[in-house]
Length: 436
Image (cartoon, rainbow, N blue to C red):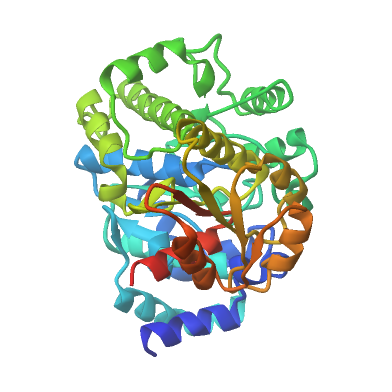
């Protein structure tokens, strides 16, 4: 099979969540264990860091991976979904898995895939673990797909677990309250494995504290010698240290301040754990290497779509924020631009998929903008006409993402801004279109 034929086989035989939604969701680890057993349990041959959370998983994963890479470690990175190329999901030191490795994995394991019938995500994860083991990575940063407790990545025993934040997303699978969702995410916390929590509130903090107590990692206090549970948003000393030594980050969204804090505390937790265990793996993970990594994280890892500037004059920016928790920060930044540029116009190319809190999102979007509602090429996309009806103001309705972008460009003056977002799919299609 060619590379494209291989991808078509994977999509056809194992429907992907990003294409078909809930029909592709297979909670539980039975298939994963069977697939890992078939492959010789490659996940046991390298060290890992495990990352879950509602938003920010991708940014935090890439910041940590870049820092480990800058420290001289051969670093695997497994994330999802991809924006343009399937191979974005599996990287070593920023380089995507080669096409021939994807083809070889499927060809070599086709019989097992058809017998076990794993989900698309399980197959992709198995491919990543097999590739990381084959290439003998020093460490791999592993992002959960959905939730944590029943996520297929939860077969690993990492050096560190990280949970970025909790918001109301995927409620049909994880629960319709923040404590219920926090409990699912907390499922990645394991006995005697240190854990960093990025953001908490009065509803979620008790969930993590109880889980940490159950797993024996609850110390006497934050940043104390016996502490193996860190709440990043409460680590003020580490925040001050980060601001003194790390003055630049290639990720420019307002929300990245919280992701940077979570990633930084996670890296310090790794260093502390390493020192306590007399390990030398992270000796080169210094403030200078972390600063270098944060300043060039996108260049080093290939991360895209996080408040990314795609074009100047007119300014075109895209962002993958796709639920109310994430779009709240995007809207804040858009409103900030409007305040700073009252003489210019904001154009918004926007589309969403059907498992998000669209009603809440609509209340967050800037009213003082020209909208071009559109829909990505997935049956999960909300029709552009429906979004326009929900908006209840003047707006363009353009089903094709490419046509919506082109219409916005034609309408915009050189000093205007065009924002593209609402879902990963919209951003992915925009990146393909504007790269031609």
